[in-house]
Image (cartoon, rainbow, N blue to C red; front, side):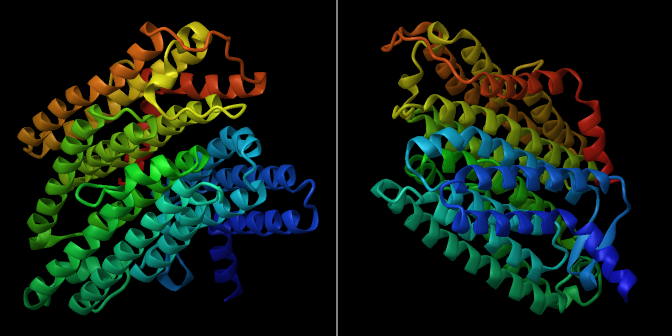
Length: 481
């Protein structure tokens, strides 16, 4: 018994480290209020990088079921936990000056971010529907508070209220779908559900399961802001402080897609066609409307919101293929998207300094004349999101579209390619504003040297991963081997 408990604790160390970090950061903020901000930030960084190290150590370990079947440790969960911790660390680093300038409680921000990170890690390691739901709620509740963490801003409170109400509705739909699936299969664990789907009893309960599947897909779609469950995203992205927008747009997407992969990679048997039809509608609507509606945006944060909607749709193309190659392509897509989105919105946070707030696309006018290097880094980010070779964003789209072609869904891949061409327009519009419009402010922009070095490494990583993608792709393929 003790040996089994020790093994469980060993594989669950990344989550335990994050929980310990959140507790210590909270105590530090209470007992050392004057140094709480720096102390909490330091504790968070130590906890996040220790969690990354632990996750990487177990990445090559075989699939292990923990805590009486409630959790799973496998290459996919280890990869996602490592990337979640990495992107959260990036978000906290980029946001530190922004939070201080605007009088936001740094201690509260760090504690909420770590608690949400814990929920994300539990979510991607869940092996039962109950654990999945608990992880989802632990991830979501701090996000609602982070949206309204700037108490003097009415826009943030309005966005948080909308986020909370719609999030509660989506959680209710997800929970109702889980109860229907339990009623149809008599199981909560994913392995048992997978066995029930291919068993003879499913013939009797097929209608009940499909009904539950629709509700489950609706709840998952809300967390990824897929059309038609996307309406909260533009308002929340715009109303929340930019530091919170950065956090909401990155790591939670990895966790939500991990939840989707866990569920939709089950052995569906004769229900595969029903599952595929749901995925097809969600993916096409999201890639189409997300890219089209982004064209008319003037607010840079709303543009990134619609961009996130379209990218989530492309990730769902990988799930739509319902093959190991498709699932690995979806995993690769969302990990790379997290790096791209954190770089794009990260620069918006870094440029919002000394009371200035970058909210509109025109606020980036003439960025090249004020700081050519930052403009070039942003160009790399935007071109990568648009899928321009040799940047890594090109390969992400290529892999998910190839997975569709391999299973005979060529017409869906063609539509995805056309939507990518449409999406390239609004990214190029931002590039045009940075390079060809005259700046209203003529003073040069300068960031601290440490920030410039880290952001430069972040931007250049998108080029490096585009030129040398094999290592990350191999890890994603191994997760579904």
